Image (cartoon, rainbow, N blue to C red; front, side, top):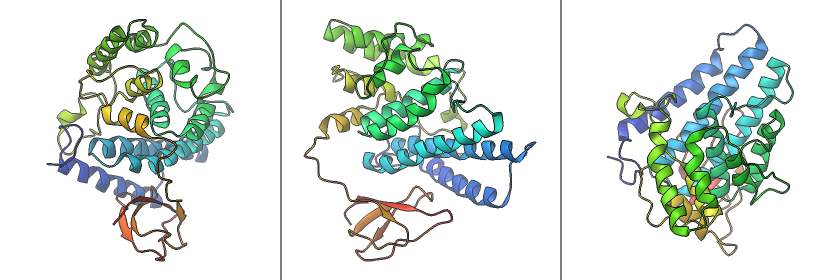
Length: 311
């Protein structure tokens, strides 16, 4: 049993297996290459592989009940991994503006896109949102989908007003934005959450909680519903569903300009600036205590350490 897990499907063994497999993958591909027809293809396959691991780590840490603040450095790493993936795909396919996610054709890739949008929004990282959108817009997606634009227009300038969307599953969520009656908006938010999981029957992660401790389950989360509730002031007090991340909305709403200033990240090789627990996305399960003045360790490829909590 994981004490603070946010979904009951996640077992302690599954969580342990995730990080064990992640570490094995890092070690294996440090010495081995992906089967490919060219160096450029191998680099693109490698970039996609590790981008997926980072995205799944965010999901499983949130599902396991880890601190929301812990997601912020992981989100930075995730956006950087998409940027790296886009560069490798562009070189391999010789298409400069290729997208890392085909959001019009693939429902699960659209969902991944709006999940990343939503995490940037709820964690108050507009800078990361701008960087991520810059990877998707140039592929022709700007001004083409209502939910895509409605998630962006409150935070990014010069967005588009559009009345069409790619995938029907998002209809109740879009209707919630434009509902005149607040009670109706809340009801549509609940309807969206109720419909969410069945709509993704074809997604590769669907029913992964049935695979047991060796399976691929990391969590089922409609982060976009939370982002819309936050951005458009929808009352979610009555929304009850396991896929709705209510504490993320509360986090976004409660973070004010007076929020205590975060401790600045520390680059590996430099000394710890504040005693407490630190974490680096450069290595799985890296959270540990450092005393002030202690030298922060490095990993292959470098590392940036982020303060998590007092000791």
